[in-house]
Length: 79
Image (cartoon, rainbow, N blue to C red; front, side):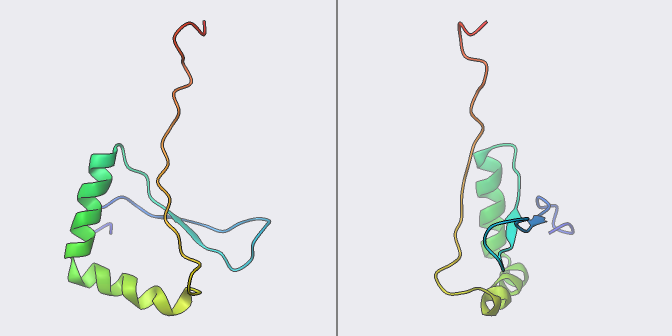
């Protein structure tokens, strides 16, 4: 990912809660940046094969993807 100039991946594990969970997090400045990199990833055969090779370590039905965004905290009239 670094060699391709893609967003770095942050690897996290829960301190408490579910066991045997790994969370991979990537941050993008906007949705368009995410979409462009995601498209490039799926078109990159080498990168996608590395991703597919990890499937043997994933419990079927446990994978999920989330897309979250910041909530503005400066509301008009909140002064």
